[in-house]
Amino acid sequence: MTGDLEKRRDEDVEPAHGGGSTELGELVGRLTADEDMDRETRGRLLGRLARLLGQNARRAGAAGIARGRWLGDLLVEVAPHIPIRDRETLSSHHHGLTGEALADSLVRVASNTTTGVGAAGGALAAVQFTAPPLLLTAPAQLAAETLVVAAIEVKLIAELHEVYGVRVEGTGTVRGRAFVTSWARQRGINPLEAGSIGSALGSAAKAALRKRMLRVFGRSMSTMGPLLTGAAAGAALNRGATKALANTIRTDLRASAGVPPPLPGEDRPRLPSGD
Image (cartoon, rainbow, N blue to C red; front, side, top):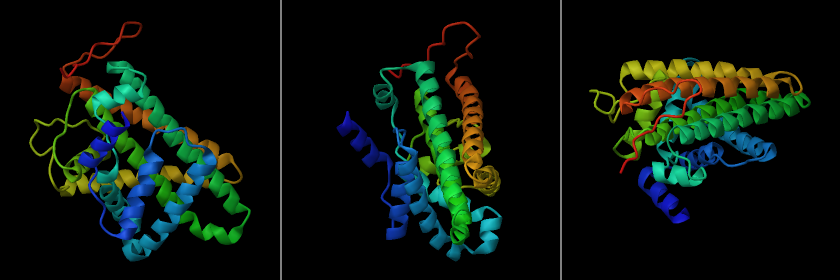
């Protein structure tokens, strides 16, 4: 199973270019993994990412940051490095679940992970409030949380497409941009729709991406509350937003796969097996 996963990563994750870009991709990759990471480890990784983004922000300039262009460009940069598992691998990693039950499990894990990011960011902010000089790192910390939450949700969207049999073909760069666009627009991808998959983001997709990143950035600001109130607020907001996004994407994907939505109290409908 491990060998299959590594092979999958080699196929779908393109190599990063440059030392800083490589470290950025590696950090986001670790923070998006659906593993049982403790708050201390997650907070430490967020801190490293924040320091790296602080250096990167100086090159972006204040105008690019304020308009969301910098954050959007960062997400596009890291998207090809997010490991996306195929349906068989996902099932094996989720105790043999398939269909809607597997999709439910993916959403639950992703929601828990974005919850953990909000809690870790709030805990890190609480430490900063006890050491005023460190408050200078707050903007970079918010950018780190925003980038990681967005990357987790992009990964969720990509893997939900796998579960529902809506396969997006192409290189890691092409697939990454397609899923980033899906995240920004909060819509599932229809591979048969002209322009849904391309090697570059159009002006409308870029505008949607910047707007979406700024919304997540504003949500992340709740983690800067005093003491640990920010941790609770950030965790709750992230969980709710991730679940809402997943519900919207799943509705689109059911339509693409020709699967009727489940009714209350009835068994989950079968999804295409891919055989």
